[in-house]
Image 1 (cartoon, rainbow, N blue to C red):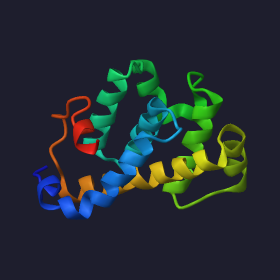
Image 2: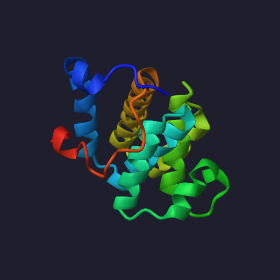
Image 3: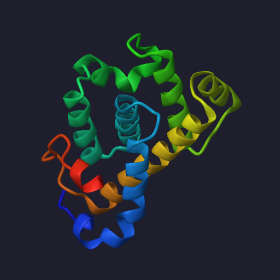
Length: 154
């Protein structure tokens, strides 16, 4: 696929709010490896190649195992994720599908504080926004280097 618009160059003003959400989440009480697993999972669901490349590389740089990355699409059947991770995946997948079933909320509520549930919801919204921008404008996937946007966000 050919790229359409370099939104990182042309859309700086519009993207400031989205960058702000990312900076907020980077300082939230949700552990960074879990946030990146969430970003990776929602990017799988949404089919965003650029974000899959980015978050898989960031996760590997954080020490995430290949097995856990490969098994993420089948997290419900996989024994390698904690109860907290499972609750987070279920919650953000529901939010991504414009749902919030009571049973999923109650499970998430057992693992996360109210503030953390808000942060998980903001994480789902944020990565979905990035997925949609990347799908629309088709940046070239595969060239991301771990931490490449960290300096920009700080």
